Every structure is written in structure tokens, then in C-alpha cells.
Length: 497
Ligand SMILES: Cc1cc2nc3c(=O)[nH]c(=O)nc-3n(C[C@H](O)[C@H](O)[C@H](O)COP(=O)(O)OP(=O)(O)OC[C@H]3O[C@@H](n4cnc5c(N)ncnc54)[C@H](O)[C@@H]3O)c2cc1C
Ligand code: SF4
Image 1 (tube, protein in one colour):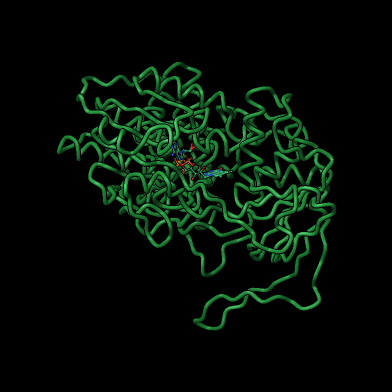
Image 2: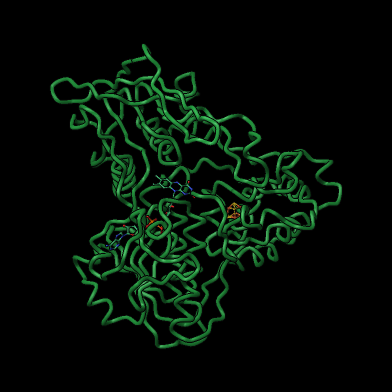
């Protein structure tokens, strides 16, 4: 429970990140290792609230045993804290870095004081565990003789692979990219999640017996029939990869790119040649506009800043969120408040102001000799009549032209690609995602399961891990009739993303 009076004695203090000016000059992680004394105090703030909402439906999607490890960190029992953490979390070094921490939004202390810094503590426990050599291969005790194919090596596929391997199934992960990790490798950039940490974990998984086959596009290099004939079960964890486009006049001009093309090419070139091959979309000396917020938009901003862009504007169609929770967004719901992320901070330091502009509708791309040169926008307002739908209205005489040499579209994703699903005959739902019930994870095809963004739609790493654990349990039960695997409780009314 931490120290009984800790929450009254110590204020919330996040572990600081590196200086935004310095860190924007390189691709190393933005984090600074936390001092033990600092972490003990922050762990001491956990107040034995009795019903830990941080673990509830609105809190941690993987049921992390948060108050237990807060208390162990406060008492300096780091190895025990690590052991508690890995009971529910296969890869805390990923969530500790990239999770938006819904647990903190649901922390009971957060009702009238700033929440416990749960995510920082989680990250420090796993970093310490690796440093101390406590993280070891988890070799299965005995083989079941059953073979499972997992399509896609993002957090959903990797979590399911780790779980299924633990109980003795023989697991092969197929990945069409040249590197393992899904969006952990080619979406989230190095400064937010170092690829050496990802590589370290993949090596561990390989040493446990999991087979990874990269550059293998299921549906093209290997057919659905071949997989079904060779394996006892198949898990589709192919992610939500169809980017939302912006069909306005001028869209066909050059230098307008989907965010994932920009981010993927940059990381590939960075990992292969430290950007010396020039095989990426260059933002240096350009006026850059990123359309769309969220993690993807932030990562584009931070990457363009590292290239040395001339200017940065980040446009958002929604209104500016409030600084504090509104009356319609009470605790313990996910707080819909203004969050200034690492990329916004770096852009503000580089250019002197927050790059974000809210309530703007993009109307037309302007171009010169076929290359984008600007973007025309209009201000909008959102209105809602009592009990009615929220409606967008353009405000007259607010047209504005923004200069742009490079535009990134970070407008979200519309679901999984259909080709691989058609190969199996797997049904999709009205949202374009795989039709499979949360909790059951099976599809309309016997022995074929689905998890992660391909099933739930674009979401978060921690939700992909929730689904990976759940799908592993479902597959194990399907193959053996019973299972000793654990999976998170179903969270049916939780965070929509
Ligand atoms: C730029 C960006 C930044 C993000 N930042 C964060 C963040 O900071 N925090 C957070 O919690 N979430 C973040 N997210 C969301 C998070 O990354 C995803 O929700 C999560 O990765 C989904 O996991 P997944 O395993 O379902 O799919 P993915 O990670 O998308 O992995 C799917 C994999 O399947 C492979 N694949 C697809 N089709 C085939 C095929 N036919 N054959 C073989 N392989 C195939 C793909 O190549 C890919 O590697 C971010 C997303 C983006 C786009
Ligand atoms: S995984 Fe995310 S929600 Fe769960 S404890 Fe860690 S930061 Fe909180």
C-alpha cells in the first residue's frame, strides 16, 4: 500500500525526460533513468484505497497488479515487484514507455490530487530487472505437439506467441516486413521506444523456441490453405493498416504522404544506414504540415523536427480539449484533456510556439509545378442541439492559406487489409474489422482466431497485449480443452481507443 501518509507528504513528480532541445538532435530515447529515492516516494503515494480502480475496467487493460508493485518499490523489494509485474504483463518495457496510462486516469488519488506515477514506476521496475539479470528465458516444461501460426508480429502477435509458447505449443510468427515488431518497430519511433530494447526481447522469445519468419506475406508468399494444412490453429494479428485519406482538391500533388510512409521509411533507413542511404522522405528545410493529432501525428512532428524542418504546423479538426476534466468526463473515465506530448514540446522549443491549431477544416491543397505548396483551411465550430448529434459548421470569412512543402496525413486507420482475410474466408463486421467477439477471439472459420487492431480497430499497444493474452487462452482451450494460461478480465465498457 505504500506509506500510509505518503500521498499527503509527497507531491506527484514525473520522472523528467531529456531536455527537449538536446533530445531533438538525435534519435535516442527521450527518457532519463529515475533515481531510486524518487521512485520510492512516488510508490509511497499509493494509498491502499481498498478498491484499486487503476485495475478496473477503466484502468489497466492487462490487469497489472499496480498497488502491489507500488508497495514493493516503496519497500525497496525490486525483484518481488518485477515478479508481480510479469504475472500480467509480457513486455513491461514496451508499455512502460509507450502506454498512455489509463490506469493513472482511474487512480483513486486522482479524484482530488494528482494520480500516482504508475507508468514511470512500471518502466523502472522492468529496466532494473534487465540490468540485474532477472529477466530470463521462459522455457516451456513440455511440448504439446500442437503447432500454431501467428500472422503479424505486432504487440498482439508477440504477446500471444509468448503465452502459447509458455504452455508448450510450437509457435511460428509470420511477418511480411523485414523486421519483427509491427508498429513497435516501424510506427513508434526510436526516441519513444528504442529498437535495441525490442531486439533484446525478440532474442529472448527466439531463445524460448518461438520461430520468426520475416519477409513472408501471408496470402502471397504462403497461402491460407497452406497454413491451415500445416498448423493446428491460426491467429490473425495483422493490425489496422489501411490509412484514412483526405479526398480534397489537390490531393494528387507531390509531397503529400501518409504518416506511416514517412515514419516507416525513416526508421528503416535509420536502422539500416543511420539515414545515410537517403532512402526516406526528407523534411529538412521544409515547411511541414501534419494533419491529424494523436500519437501518429506527434511522432511525425518529432521526426520532422529531427530532420531539421523549417516550420511545423499541426492541424486538428476537433476543438482544443480542456485543461481539466469537464463535467461530462468524470473520474474514473479516461480524461479527455489537452496533453502536450514529446513532439509538441520539442516543436515549441524549436519554433517558439505550440504547433497545434484546432478547429480547422482542410479544404484544398495548393501546388506549384505539381508539388504541394500550401493548404487552404477554414475555421469550424462544433455545435450540439439538446439531445441531438454533434454538428460541424464552417465559419464564414475564415479561409486561410498555410505554406507547405511537405504534408503528412495522420488521420487514423480504417481497418485491416482484406486480402489475407479473404484467403481464409474470414468475415468482417460493419466497421471493416475482423468479425470476432471480444473474449472469444474465434472467427467464423474453425481454428482461425483474431486479435489486436485487426479485430478491435485502431487502438493501443496495451490493448493489443490484452487481446494477445485473451486469444492465447482461447486457442489453448480450443486445442487442449482446458488451459492454465491467465488472461485479463473482460473490459467491455472501457476506453474506446
Ligand atoms: C505511428 C503510430 C504511433 C503509435 N504510438 C502508440 C503509442 O505511443 N502508444 C500506444 O499504446 N499505441 C500507439 N500506437 C498504436 C499501437 O501501435 C497499435 O495499437 C498496436 O501496435 C496494434 O498492435 P497489433 O499487434 O494489433 O498490430 P500491428 O502493430 O499493426 O502489427 C501488425 C503486423 O502484421 C503484419 N502483417 C499485416 N499483414 C500481414 C500479412 N498478410 N502477412 C504477414 N504479416 C502481416 C504487419 O506488417 C505488422 O507488422 C501507435 C500507432 C501508430 C500508427
Ligand atoms: S500497462 Fe498502461 S495502463 Fe497498465 S499499468 Fe502500465 S501504464 Fe498503466
